[in-house]
Length: 409
Image (cartoon, rainbow, N blue to C red):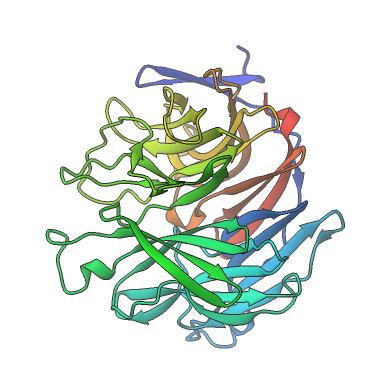
């Protein structure tokens, strides 16, 4: 393997070759302001919907260094490019968290529902909603996803569209109000949103990891939710829950990593589905070495096959995943740069077939391993992958690129 083609790395008994040639990606940076962070993308028909958080204009212009106000912004990517950014919400209580990012989903009637985190007290925050009936040009407050008033944490939301609205899934701390983690735990809950009406709340897991992202996908048989579970023995592996005709299933572990860790690693899974095929990607630091993995289900998430190691060398995690038209998984993740002495990292992509065949890991962009680099996000829009990530620095910037699916081999 020559130096211009690849760099071979070996760690923990797992060899990974990284292409040194850049992907044929096209920069499509969104209209995000200086200091932008927390990008998130979702698909709406053939369009890509992007949200991010940025300082208000007064902070950008340094007119008031004491102003802590932020705003949640929205833009739509069409064949003509990005739409003019619209403000969904703003204020000093809008919570900016490197790992718990806002998002937006399109309902079947075309309306958009956005969520973000709002500080409600010391160490407490809730999930606020806003709705747009004009494609994202204007937004109106739509209440809260969690309706309890406990001074606890609520967040890490994922969404699915249903026949007559949307459904949210989130981590909910209300059971911890006034209690220690010895007596109670973070829970996984769900509720539906129909227009501006919220209802049907259910607790679907009573003990989960406290600050890892959730993700949801719609398989042929119904919704499948991926999250980091938590046993009484502090094993925090990835589980899924399915919606069945009988109701929500019991949690099913995707793979028995056996990662026993006394605190939350802040590194949740990602899920994608097409028909009966489901792919889940995740990070684990269970022995013998840290790794990013992916596993497939051919029965809508009821059972999973063996895990394929996407990166067992220097992975940081922060994964995302999409399925291509053939059903292969296209996995993105953050990996440390072995040549960097200052915490450098890169956003990478790799193809994995359901049979476990691995493609070449490919670098997309340079970034940082620090928290402020956030979580790269991706969606597949036809024959392209659209990725968004944070370029850390002073100020930080939100970047985006389009990558041909055919280039990920």
